[in-house]
Image (cartoon, rainbow, N blue to C red; front, side, top):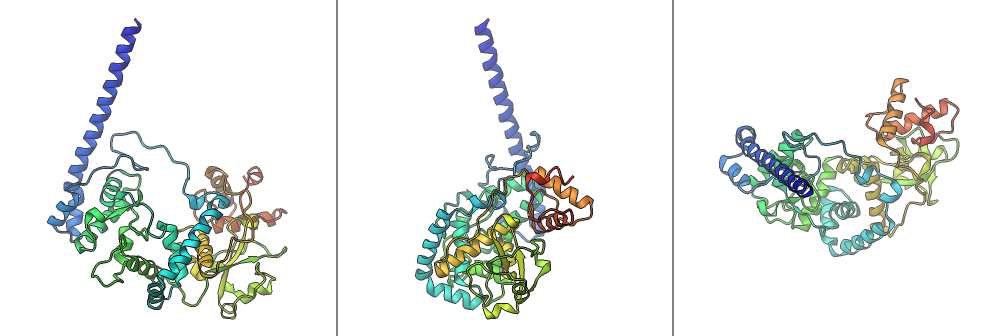
Length: 412
């Protein structure tokens, strides 16, 4: 009997394996049909030649190991827990060891590439330390391994990801890059999410912002340092970087000044903020050139973390990665590269660990009583923080401007 059961189990396992293999094989066949009947007409309409299309997909393979896939005929993927570092606990995101290492390398490279950075700043108005900070954060100054053939990633995601339309657009953009002759397909490598080269540009960003700065006739963000640095600077410049201005300043907000005044829509002259008693935590005065210019309060962890007055350039950095923590990381790293600065003086409290579903519940409760939380997505952006602070003050609570477990039962 036991022998019979063992044979039966092995047979069932073998059968299941065959079914799975057959299912994957069927998806692979669907993929090839999709390339010709669905994607090719769109690519042709976008101006891609038949020869370029055939060459681009001659060796492309589906990558079944990528995240967020929804293969046709397979069970729908379970919702994934938010794991993107930029939306996690701030304290762990600002690893002092990592920042110190990047800053030391950045200062060395600032010296090694001083001439290039000077030309880049003259051309685009973006300071070298900011460009170096993004280069360091995105690809370890071009030293990080960029593992995936980008056409495999984009084709897989366009065909069977949870966001196919986004990757379909990027796949068409990638075809235009290959037709331009800027890069050979074998060198066109990127991340699992489709971001390419040393600046980690999506293909559509490459077409808009990549530049040939070394004069060899190609925009090469995979191998050329001048092209990579200038492309980053051009991106920021095109997004509205204001030359001659800082990104922001860590400050101390006195008791009695509400934390519910943050956001780019509540900008006011920095002199007005100082008139409220807000000063730089370093004790230094704001630069004279900044006093009459606009600034915005930023409290990414409410009263549980460092506090800032930021300039419009902070929000330009966010165009690169739409996260307050990311932009603060770039600003802090740039300051370290420029002047051997250090960590923020304020400490990050025990925040950023609540379930997104709990934060979403608070957002929905605030919306139900008339508050604007921005996008109700379980992520505490500035509108959520601001509305929470206003609600706390109105209900006799000390405003903290950040969701925490103690508020779950109070805010329903």
